[in-house]
Length: 530
Picture 1: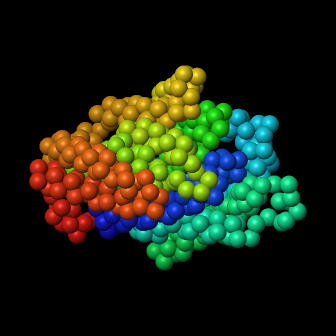
Picture 2: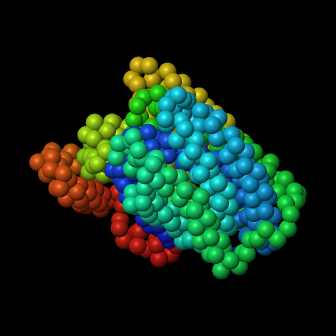
Picture 3: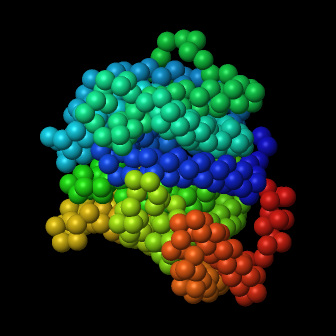
């Protein structure tokens, strides 16, 4: 079996993820501009979070963490991987069809579970309506995630990484169509123009969610067919011995995924009692998810099948080298991103979100959350590097136990701090829980031997990476002060941000090259070698 090209895979996933996150920014900027932090915005964000939450639970969390290592090992040994994938595809389709029907019927209860602060006002009815329209997305995107796992295990990353771009393109079109067409005139009678516009855009967005799921599934299914894996609904679901084993391995990962969703649930519950907070935290989350997705998620997607196949082949030295390079490259990109989020959060929030219905006060609130999330960004990326060490060994139990501890940290802080510091408590809790989860994963990985250790080159360079990021942070701080006259002018804010990004890149990469934090030539050679 052809080996996975780690670095080229990382850059493929990273570039497409970057494009997806940029398109996601365009989407969120448009939603913020039209809807601000009003009822339609908060209702849609909660409604869309429901299928997204269960997607992480069923597909990207439990199922893929168990499926990808098993499928990768079958590829390595030639043990009929297509039959295994076919059985899993049919079984998941059957289970999630039933689950989708139950979710649509139980939508009022799910909305209360997600945002009980909506009860008794118009946000609740809107969230139920939007949730019922959006919930079938869970079926299509979960099947797409399974097919993506098949592609990733074979070293084909492009289609799976490109699928989220399709989602964001459809959302952007939905905002434009909703703004152009609108609800029927009789429904708008008695409403302000802004409110009627918000409702019509919310309707269009909710309807676009399942359509986007179908489009994403079609894209990865076509790519898998070209790769020689044609997954169909050709037979009834059957519980084979291999699927039983898959379920046994997936169960702890499912529980861990449930624990992580409880963290999100607690955060939204706390935020729902503060007007506008659900939207502020969502927009801030999108901002810090950009580097997390481009770096952390990309490296995790590529690393899991690679480590699984190396483990099957007994290549411990190769695993040692791969995880060291993955950590080095990831932190070389993550640490400066975290510094930027902490040094210029208000500038970022103002340029990206302050327009239309989003005010200066909204931008200030988003900036506070962005800075706090920036503190946790390295922890979230390190989790993505360490988790494949467990899942490649089909060890899903210990990550579950660690996730429970992190959940307790999150719940205690989010609920306990909210009476004291208000709506920002969930962001602080998320960041501290992220660092707790990383610490537990690192502690538990000590018994994995050489494959779980970072090499001497990593330990030598990480301090230099941090020094280069500190220099960049100082340059950004000074540049941000100097550019305040431009930042005060709405039409020049974008220019000022571009200047700051250029300053950050020159100061960071120039300093890093000078002090030996990294060598750009090495990235080029690694990319050629894979």
